[in-house]
Length: 448
Image (cartoon, rainbow, N blue to C red; front, top):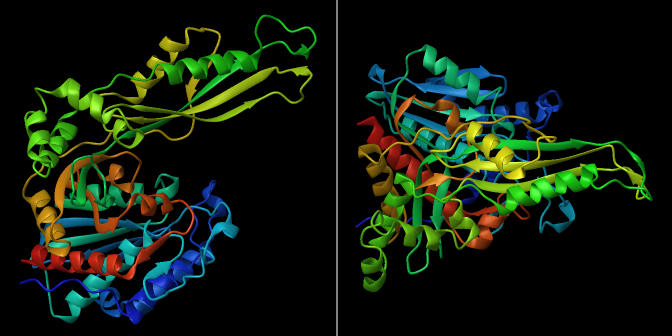
């Protein structure tokens, strides 16, 4: 019988806590990056994991680190294991139980920005690799660890450069593993057990700027429309007319897998997701968390216009963010915005970075391995597929692996999920132990 995973001890927890004390915030523009904090984190990693830094080749791309663990058959690549060192800023430190960069460790949790997203995965991979090296493990096929430093600002200086290096070297791995899915409690109606969602792709990303220019003047003599009014009406039309609902093959597969963990009556209702597609789509579209699985989502996020209450604005603009479902595209998002606003006088254009939906990989042996190890670390869970609704460094590695999985074997409630990029981010000692044990088992299997 497999021994249950036990929470990490103080020494392991403290190594993560020290990393959380490094204020490695991704900034825009990147010229404002806190280089000293990234250097401090790098020195901590090198001091804490001496075998890794003696035995593995490490290439630097800015503050990003690409480790190559050469196998006995070095040209064959088993896996690309991704994580990132950077974190998002903190909005209101006064709302935190402990200061966000204090790296507080108590009897149950390790607290701090990056505890889940994503320094715990960086440190867990290094803990597992250090232990494997200490045990004399040498993989048959090569394994790469890629730790970006600007994932939160789209990875242009980190993941993009590391992926380009791997492409130039002709690397093709069996498995790419990155952040994204977790084991969620109360994820699906009718499923009593926690659900591990192993994501096999991610949605695209685009921000559209809607702008209008008008003649200014005094507010006592307005024309029939103002710049603010035109942009507001356009945003309302875009929000009121979202892009179509659609059941993708990945979502159909997800529903089919979840069905096995449902009560008999629900299983019968959803016995063939493709045949019952309209019903499945209606169920998923009922809530914002699941609607993202069946639609390119629309989120107005920024509005600017006017300078004074009694002055007609000469210009107004709004930003609308889209997360693009496979089958749609950046181009189709722009076309949709122009079609539904029905105002040729508006400027509708992309602003900032954009990415198409990633390639998706069908579940195969590498997916099955991740699912098997997840069940071993957290027994009794259901495992399904899915799409990452946000953006990760994985999208830059398209084509470099046969199977892509975005997953970490940590058990989170809905309240825990809100802590990611939010207030009081933390990881339990038990969840951190699960991460390390999962990585240790993964490396053992990949080494064979």
